[in-house]
Amino acid sequence: MTQELRNFTHAPGAPAASPAPAAPAPRVLRCTGSRVETPEVTTFMLEPVDGQSFGWQPGQYLTLNLDTAHGQLSRCYTISSIPSAGLEITVKALPGGPASTWLHNTLLPGTVLEAHGPLGGFTPPALAGGLQGPAPSYLFLAAGSGITPLVSITRALLDAGDPVDAVLLYSAHEPGDVIFHRELRSIPEASGIRVETILSTGSIPTVGIPRAPGRLDADLLLELVPDVRGREVFACGPPAYLEAVRSMLEAAGCEASALTVESFDIADHAPAVVSMAPSPTDTAAEAQVFSVEFVRSGRTIECPADTFVLDAALAAGIPVPSSCTLGMCGTCKSGLLQGTVEMNHAGGIRPKEIVAGKILICCSTPTGDLVIDA
View: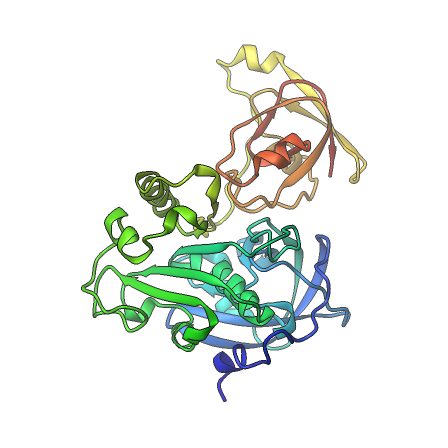
């Protein structure tokens, strides 16, 4: 029996026992194996070196710290598995990408690496234990590698064995780019989860309703999901895809609050050199310098008003968890205990987290002295 089918043949209502979701923490992991998903995508199996298993919410991710030829790099990778099936990440090799290339070439059975997590809030409340009453209906929208958190969520819904009403629309370039192809095809109709693949080029899709190649648009969305307005929507993919999704949903009359998005389509590049030298023409900003105290690190540094807090921390040698540096991934999310900042994020933090005093230090500049829980 294939691994794909094993995920879907347990007795309803009797999923395998899983460790409770854990708080984010430093972890040391060992690779135990790998599985090729497509010519460019590989799933890596991992386990904690100390033997202490930990749980996570479906849709969460790990930040991996990799010692590469370009120095130490930090990158976010979604946990594509569910706890009862063991820890797995699914990674696409990007041309010239030092982190993904390192993983594909170096992460062999026995290789040990450092990580931090689990992190992220891309989990339906019903799966996070935060919802009472009838289960909602879902629409999952994925493009490219954006399928990884949504396949974890789909696996969790199937593993729970409860009635579910979910539609997964997965956009890819051509048949060979469809990650988890056999697994998606093997989801039984009786599960209540319907999968449709949408191919922009190449042959007619083999998962879902046969149709000519093309891209997802508002008309096709309504054709495939006529009741979209009544569904909770979770979308993951490149920024341009997510912008298109927002437009489609708006055209369909969906409330903005019904959409939760996540994007990890961040260039896998070598780290840029952080320059703290002030601009000779920027005398006003040069005069504004604030203190930033990192409580858990026990360090206090100075940060100019025009400098992101993360840049100042890294320049001072403070190892703050971070990845995208664009306000998208949420890895650097920290509690602001005192002070105020100007924050210009790109979706990596939720309004309720901001109200609770959280900030993304990668896209926050100080407007006064700060005390940060980091």
